[in-house]
Image (cartoon, one colour):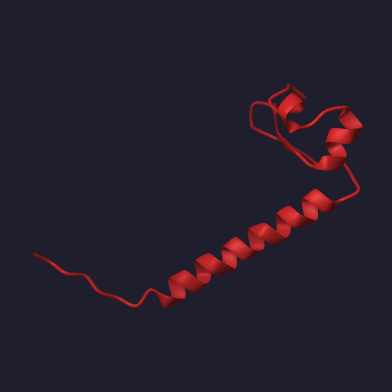
Length: 68
C-alpha cells in the first residue's frame, strides 16, 4: 500500500482565489447596464446578462441556444 502525503495549502488558496475571481467577474457582467452576450464556437448564444435579456425581449431560457 502506498501513501501519498503533501501540503495542499497553496493549491487550496489558488482554487479559492480563482473561485473569488469568477464570482467577481460574474457580478460585473450581471450588473452591467450594457447588454453582454456570449457566443459558442457554433455561433449560438451561450449566455447573456439581464440587460441583454431586456434588450432582446426575453431571458436566457428563451434566447439561450439561439443562432446569432
